[in-house]
Amino acid sequence: MKRIGGFLLLFILFSCLCGCAKKQEENLEIIEDFYVGYTLDDGRYLTLSLDVPYQGTTLGEAIFNNQLTVDNFVSTLEYIESLKDGGSKIYKYNQSNISNRTYGKEDFFVITCDGKDGIRDIVIAKHKETLMNKCSKNYDDLENVSMKIKEGSLTKKGATIIITDKSNRKNIYGNAYKLEERVEGKWQDLKTIIDDFSWTLEGYSVDETNTLEFKVNWENLYGTLKEGEYRIVKDASYAGEGTTHYITAPFSIE
Image (tube, rainbow, N blue to C red; front, side, top):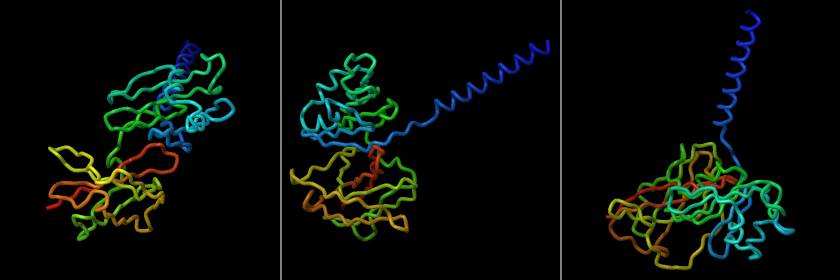
């Protein structure tokens, strides 16, 4: 009886340890670095977390140089599921199911964004889990990061904004921004008065006081604002994350 009891005790202990290890593994956050990106001719952005080979070059280079279209590439993949955002889809490249291993010997997943947030990016990653938030815009979701209009700086033509970042994310902030207007309770992109414009690519981080200031003159882009509720929107991200977060600062023009 003692031997049987000892065996049962060891079995129960082993089962508990395996169960705890499995639970920890399930809860372990999968992190991938997205360091390779291409802006395509149609305006979409292709981002990869791994090198995918294709006919002596890489998949990203082949699509960027029009050797291969995104549609033709996606048509060779296995459809997995559609997201509940209106049209974004996830696919898988399973190298074991492709006799000539067109895109190498490593499995990967692809998401084509086409949802309600207007993102049309294509993202490629080794793990499906890392793709699930790539097609949605994340507003004011970063802890210890905020933005506001500097007191006394607001006019109908511009303002100075102050970003406070006390996170440990090492976020980078660029010159780009957009204005949104609150219409019937919903935020809508404010229409620009010019169609062709671009942003310089400088990146800035907060100083030793954890703050960063931008002087914004939107007159040339949006004109003089009329009476209403608005907010300025800027993005925050760090190298390799692959997800863009947006911070906002609401204001009123009277």
